[in-house]
Length: 258
Image (cartoon, rainbow, N blue to C red):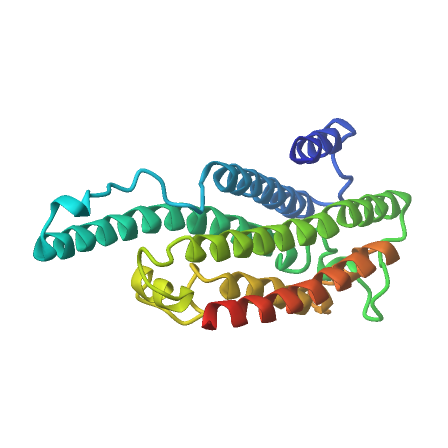
């Protein structure tokens, strides 16, 4: 799927440059398309990191406690816990960095200044219609609309995927540390991150689900007009995904608090 998206972008270039009435428009459109390509690349990198980074700690050194006295056992357990925390933090940080980069790049596409591949203000009439009456202007507008319909829904669903899959990874990540680091997921989170609030720590699944839910504001925004690029089936898919995210957020909130 990721390779197909890259091929689609290459095909856009092969089909010819978007017709534009000015060099300023061409530069703006080039910048928007570059932003999309960077977002796709960040998504692919996140996907690879998530596949290659296990939420389960591995290679944690253990000590044979039967050969140790009480004091030595306590010291050994403390050393094991510290090493477990170090390993978990390293894995968590790798996923957080990749997920954050993908989330930010995709968000930049959706909240692109003036709207992704949107008409410049001078190309619109005061009533909101298209002031470009020439055949060239009409063709350019059709190309922009077609590209928006291909790219924006995909960017929305990629961003939902980043947030949703990262939240699932973090839930397994925290649960794996019980009881090695702490007895509850909330206590584990506290040990791994100085910011231990569920909504503000990127090591919490709730953090990523909150970002997934905030997508509704961008999609519905009249400033960016992302919703205008959705077909009916895509709108239904988006609404269903939001509902599933709400349920998942409630479930994870209960599990973490236990």
